[in-house]
Length: 340
Image 1 (tube, rainbow, N blue to C red):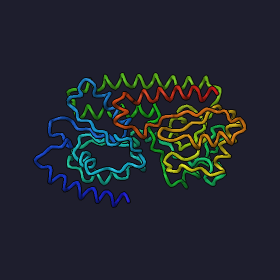
Image 2 (cartoon, rainbow, N blue to C red):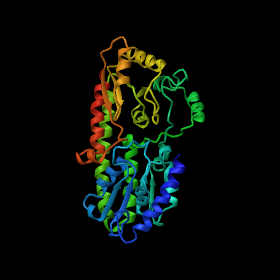
Image 3 (cartoon, one colour):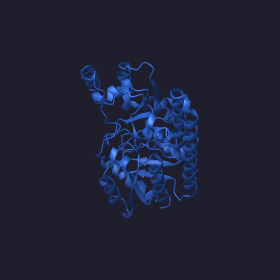
């Protein structure tokens, strides 16, 4: 399907290119600005912070600006054209970006710089795991205290999805990626390299400070386990802080209906671990969370939302949403979750 879509888009792109010879529709840097295209919100926000003080010399585009989910995104003809003509293209690099390689082959700008975020943090990549109720007797649900490395290695070999692509949800990954973006900006615009490095240093300092507060929250918490009645894109996050987790679905899953076995298992974990809340991700409803709570003995647990930044709209950005503000909100939710 994606292959067919790409060739369809390529045909449209050719028509757009021919029709637009005498008219710039903002898909190139003909105005002398450095064109940067980002696929997802975190990259876009990081670049916005790094170019502060020299914004007028950049044309910054976020492809997924209508709240579309990373896993469902399909590039338009205009998206492909923007990628083709930009100076710097930043993308995640996971299984949801299979369209990217074909798009890059069509690039008009042969000097384009490209950042694959998963390559930047290659030494920190983790495998996406199955979740509760996937007919594996729940052995894939990550419990740090009962973690079987040999069984996990076996599972990695079998897993068809590969590495988890939600790399931005680790503040420590964010540091590495932000530093890499700053280096690329300096290569593109050496005259302002000092500014980009200064902005990078300031931003990384904020990331480190927030990271330390997350670590302190975990250290002081009464509970070490999170339970999600949803898919689970937070592997990197829990790895950073040594948290255990249980989830209804894996990170990239499109499933919304949990089996009876999954509901029973998660409800049992609520009771066994005396958890005070059930978590859901942004963009999801809380029906499954309510069902799990209703099937527990206590039936009094709260439902909180943990933001994954997978579906951020232009409206959200206009209203002031930022990577740091989202992670600050997640910190407040974590405090509640770890203290019953």
